[in-house]
Amino acid sequence: LAGNLTASAAATASTISGLFAVSGTGRLWTVADGAAADDLVVIGSLSGGGSSVFRSGSGRVALNGGATLTTLRLDAGETAVNGSTSMTVQLNGGTLSGTGTAGSVSVLAPGGFIRPGNGGPGVLTSSGAFALNPATTFAVQLANAAPGTGHDQWSSGGTVDLNGAALSLTALAGFSAPAGTVFTLLNKAGSGA
Image (tube, rainbow, N blue to C red):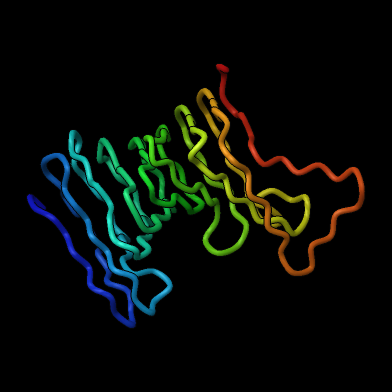
């Protein structure tokens, strides 16, 4: 794809499967919010070393395969990373969700939302740095003390810098936690600060 991509609002998700090559920088993906839970589903692999995608529109994109893009910038809407990728994700007003692995995650001035899982608790991972800012909200769902199934968790293989980000906690139906229960919302798996 050497241009931009637009997915209109629909009752069912638009789907991209197989190898999908993106070339160039600043490719705009505008995805409208339709009746489907996911408005655009990418099942295959996104290739494009040196390429970047800017995500806009109020819809939800599910990246269920791998990706070799250099940068994914989330300007609006929700993007679920459910596959494994080494790309840098930049929050610029959008929402990052899912249960996969991204490279590093950083936040630009407008901030955004980090929401692990796909509608329920899940673990979202970065293999590189995880750097937030005060305009970012880390939204966590709680049901019990089991990471990934009972509550959301971020796992970072690189440095972590929360920089005054907000934490939003939502108790799910059936929430049960006796006094003294520990919830590990951030798992620092790698070395560094």
